[in-house]
Length: 388
Image 1 (cartoon, rainbow, N blue to C red):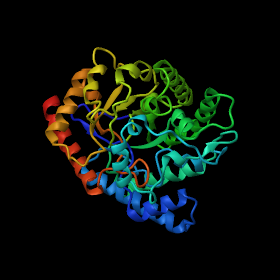
Image 2 (tube, rainbow, N blue to C red):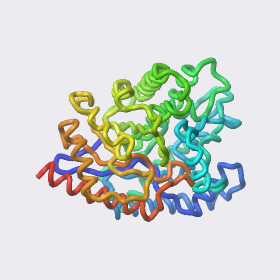
Image 3 (cartoon, one colour):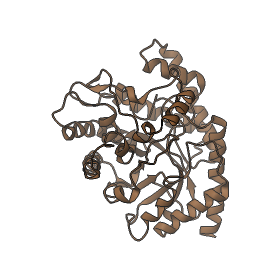
């Protein structure tokens, strides 16, 4: 994983705004509707090429395919794992449920139809195994080809994949005797995708909002100790799944849910960090630009952050249409560098993606690109101050 001795590099958390035509096709496919495969593949290819071009224009140093081939950051695995069927019913975030006025406002902002509902993922109804070797190979080849045609505009590129816990809680268990057994099976299956991404020459990003977000969802009414036991279970399973992957090729993304909401029931970073820090990865991408967690970068100071690891602080909020001033971005970068004591181990990022699931983006597409412009400019300012 590349950082820099002379400047702060920039990246983002994965999903970028999808073109309207592609979004409509993704939503229709997810709902079980008929879609012309040739049309779908053509729209995906065009969206990947555009995502690469837009990132290059915005000055993104470490980019990806915008997750254009995927309907969402997690439900896409329904086409890559066996043993799934039916429909799950993931609980609503507890912070949403306690504010009826917020729910009414959200219903107006996100009417039914035209989007992928993450709460409607399939369930585990049989043995889970990885069957998506051809699909991940094709996705990586498409990205490699797109980068070559664009003149290789990035310092490095990444491809994301979900954590075992994210899949296990999003896609509920009707087959295994215990959650631990289910998680172990999912981890063993996803290990194939993890290896394929790295072997294709890309950095692997593990998306693990479950390590924070599920405290106010599945574990909302349970003691904190039960949630921390879950975090330990997932980190251990993840480490097993990554056993054959060089840690310096892996970054772990942790957040409290990519939605604009109260978030006043979020678990604190200080409570979960001791367990998350045990993940055998080379970089930690932490959501700390948002108003609820911006102060928590301080909990990474004083030796709490793993020696030699890279910190990718979220310095852009992906749930608001405010465009951050570059000076704000630079300040956030500088605070992160001060916390871990080494600017060469900082890569500036976003809190999360801009459209984690099709139709769910809270930020207008043109504003999203403006925010990435601000990320680039803020990194330039911070670089001048931190490196001279």
